[in-house]
Length: 134
Image (cartoon, rainbow, N blue to C red):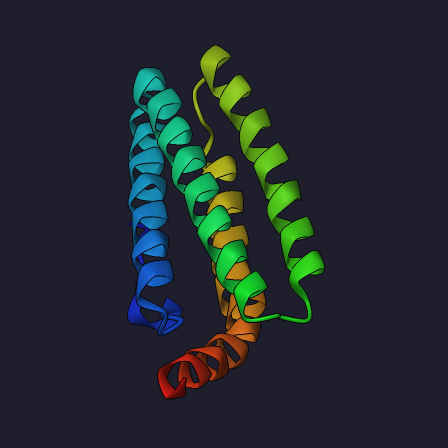
């Protein structure tokens, strides 16, 4: 079963909470795919898309505030993922969500968090420390 683990923690409480919510809806999507429950699949993709949008906006705002140097590249990854989620949402309406789709989403999210997101952690932590001293 898909679930968030402490290994995926960025140490940024808000973003970690978002990641947990995203993984919750991914687990729901996995259950829908396994049980071939199309309505749950459609709902789960919609919730996953909603939480991803909310998370990406918050994450991008934090990176912008901290003057993260790779913000544009990070935002481009988010934009591509948003397009993919919209495609998956439209597809889910007409057919059951496949286990391959769930695996793709799990792999993308896990890789994005462990590589792309972890890259901003030092910058956000330095910004946070600077704000605490001010």
